[in-house]
Image (cartoon, rainbow, N blue to C red; front, side):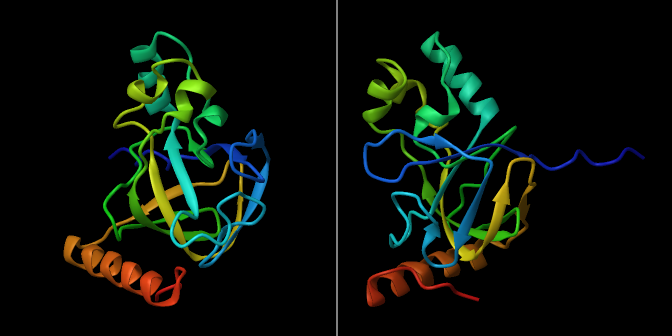
Length: 177
């Protein structure tokens, strides 16, 4: 019997203090439940707390673009060494000490054409990662594991609906059990 493959690990952490400001590579971040990454431009947003992508997806996008797609230029916060990254709304994953819940698939925006190269947004289509909200905060550092938590699809749908309702009712995401 063979041992299961080790989980994907964090190979890049990136944050920007404001909109359209350059992303900075860091060795560790603190995720705050219901708010996101401390010091990032989206800290305190309703749902867009953390964005996560896989390095192997960036390699595929680079092949499509015929140019490298550097992780820090995609405007995503976390890069793991390999995917897939869970994308089912309401599904959960552990990242370092934090517990995350999927909000939606991350769509590449036109800024990618400025940040990476013309055509980058198109090359990243279907490969741009996932947007998560922070359910339980904690520290995340380079080398930390990314572990998807098995979930029943009905349970994931219920979580996603409850998350949307809580955000609408209170004006921001509230951590759910």
